[in-house]
Length: 73
Image (cartoon, rainbow, N blue to C red):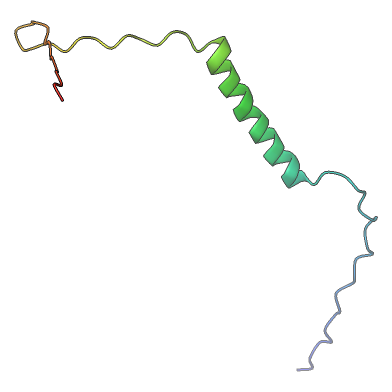
């Protein structure tokens, strides 16, 4: 059986030259940073709300535990 001649791959013509500008990866990083900054500002000034107060520690029978510290140094 005779071997078939191998076909050479056709070369693609070079595409149009790249235009100057911001690369997509840099644009994606900038978008993520802007999103994080916006979320942080929103939590601080906008919809963060007030923090819930920490409840006083209680014993098993429901009495409030009071700890006193003194330093006579």
